[in-house]
Structure formats: C-alpha cells, structure tokens
Length: 512
Ligand code: ARG
Image (tube, rainbow, N blue to C red; front, side):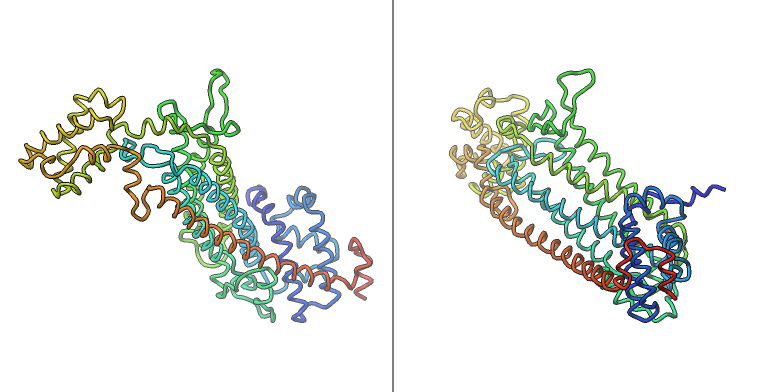
C-alpha cells in the first residue's frame, strides 16, 4: 500500500495552528448550544491546548503518523482522553468544512503579512521617487530612447501598480475571510449548531452561507493566487529593469551588494541574482495559478480529494510572493543611482524630438502631423550627418541656429514657408532641445514635471497610509476575535484546571 501517496504533509503543517483554532471554536460553540456537556468540552479543550503547546514537536513527530492534520489532532485527542469524550469533538462537522475553514484562516494570516510587505515596498518606492524628482534619465518605448523623464516619474509608475496590487489583495482577503464551518460534508447538520458564533470566534467577517457551495469552492484560492500572479508580473517587470539598468550598457544603477553575487571564476562580477530570481519566480507563481485552475476545473460538487492538491500550490505561491516582495523592497531601498550617466544618456537618440515638434505647433500654428514630418526629416538628417556640437552641448548656440536652419530648409519643401518666418525663434528651439526644460513642460496630470511628480508623491503617501491603516484594522479585528476565543477556551476548560496535562484516568474519574 502506498499510504504516502495521499498525504500532503507540508500543507498540513501550514494548517496546524488554524486547525487547533477551528477545533477550539467548534467545541466552544458545541458547549454553548448544549451539544457537549461542561465536563466534555473542558476535557477536549484542555487536550487541544496541550497539543497546541506541543506545537513543533507535534508537527514533526505525531502529525506524519496520520492521514492528515485534522485526523491527527482528533486521533490524538481520542487517544489522550478516550473516545467517549474525545470522539464527540467532531460532532456536527466534517473534514470538508474543517479543511476549507483552516485554509481560509492560514491564508488570511499570509495575506496580512504580504499586504504589509507590499505597503513597505510602496513606501520605499515613494521615498526613492521623492529623492529623485530632479534625476533625469532617458525614457524608453520599444526599449529605444523615446523622451527624457525623471527617475522619480519612472519608478512612481511601479508604486502605482503596487497600489493596485494592494487593492486586489484586499479584495482577495474579503473573499477569503468568510466561514464555511458548519456546512459539514455539504448538507449541513441536524445538530443545532451556531455558524455565526464559530465565524465570529474565528475572526471571520461573515458566514459562507450555502452549505454545498461552502465546501465545494476554492475560488478564493484562485482569486488570491491570481492577485499574486498580477503582483509577481509587476515585480518581474521592475526586476527586469533593475537587471538592464545595472549592465555596462545602461550603467544607471548599482544594485546593493547584499543583493548581488560574485562569480566563481570572474572576480569582477556582481550578478543581479535576486532580481533574476524575482523575475523567474513570477513564472513559478503563474504555474501555481494554472495548476489550481486546472485541478478545480470540472470537479463535481462538494468535496473531492482533488481539492487537497490545491493547497500546496497556495502555500508555495504565498511564500514565494511574500519573499519576492521583501527582496524587491531591499533592492530598491539600497539602490545607488549613477545620475551623471543617466542624464548624459537622456538626450541621446534625439529624445527632444517630440518637444521640438510640439514647439513648432505652438509657435507657428501648423498641424502636429506636419510638424512631425519636418522633425522626422530633421532626425533622419541628423542621423546621416550629425552636427559636431551635438556631442558637446545640444542646446549650444551654433547647434541651435544650425537646427533652425535645417528645419527651415526642410519646411520649405513641405509647407513652402520657412518656419522662422512663421514665428519659430532660436530661443524656442533652444528651449525645446533642452531636456530639463522639456520635462518641466510636461506638467499635465500624471506627467514628469517636478511639481506634478511631487504632487503625485504626496497624494500616494496619503493613500498608502490609508491602505496600511485599513490593513492594521483588519488584523486587529481578527486578533480581538481570537482573543475572545481564547477567553472562552480558558473559561470552559477551567473546570479541570488543576490538571496540567490531561490524564486519561483522572478524566475518566471526572466523568463518573
Ligand atoms: N486533507 C484533506 C484536504 O486537504 C482534508 C479533507 C479530507 N476530507 C475527506 N472527505 N477526505 O483536503
């Protein structure tokens, strides 16, 4: 017999603490509903607290002897206080609602941690942006120099993507934090259980009502991993840029030493391994999402053992995502910028061309499309026959008048008029060619102009504060419920508080 085949030990280890909570809440409720007697609930709760105290030891030595964590805990309870009482713990429930409840509790904790990490990353990005509103760099489309921007504007885009990830995670949390407990196998139960009570004691926001839906669905897992996937895609994009920017070709940044590794043969190397692994692990998380979708697809209703196969993917995806966010946070925090290189390259590839065309439109009144043609022709000419002074100072006087001269020559062939006659001055051409000044011109909402970027940073700091506060409130709410659960457990097990370790003989005596 291949008993190992049906085990899922790692996921069960992940569920251990949640299962103890679920058992406690269920027993407290059974007692309050008169389904368990005072002595019975006391004996079971004492035993559960004892197993909880054994923690790591139980997980390492006792858990692997059983089919799963739920069976393990119940079996040990029965072993320790006898079946007559211990065998009553599972009254009015099934492993089907039990496991679904445990997964939601364990996942909820992971989501709190992840949301906190994401908020931390957002904060670090906002700090970096604030420090670099004047750091000019080339902006790219198709990875070709396009228009100049600032480092602040560039990385603020990531802060915004991660802000949306935060919102998605809050949605996933809300979808997760509902209680399936009491659905039993799928048909609920004839015992007069109180589902609201267990939901409240366990810190759930509400009851997942329909008893068949409650045990059948893992859509909250799919939703959550899909949020992880989105987040990992955003992280992988940033990781890719850090990798590119740290090459000799770009030479914009230095990745902090603790996030780079050496080579076993090439002494000079600083390889961006952490960023590379963030990039790769996005793939692993997407793979997890695909696995879960495919496992759940076309499953018949209620519980099928297939569902067990979902959990390890969730555990892995959760851990990978949280660790990746933390690594990225560290990398961004310690990033060193080579500002001179960045600004030097910002004008290469005629990145002022768009602003020059815009200036022509504003100064002469010709259409943008015509101005585009003129500047395109100028750019092609510059590529064939670059101006010497281009290398020195692109907005230098000789260069500017040469550019205006060329524009006029080109325009004659297109508009039949020199643009200088239509109002284009050297002063305006010079301004358009100045990278710094043309960044400041782009001050419409969301643009890279310093004032606009500073406004965006301030606003985002407030939004981040709001998100972090709402996360903390959620965590606090759960904590308060679980404290209430512990108070109830303490109260209800008191009847035999003299007994430190539940002793089968004493308990049997108590029963009589
Ligand atoms: N280990 C199982 C899981 O993770 C627990 C539920 C088992 N239920 C059952 N009817 N076999 O899904």
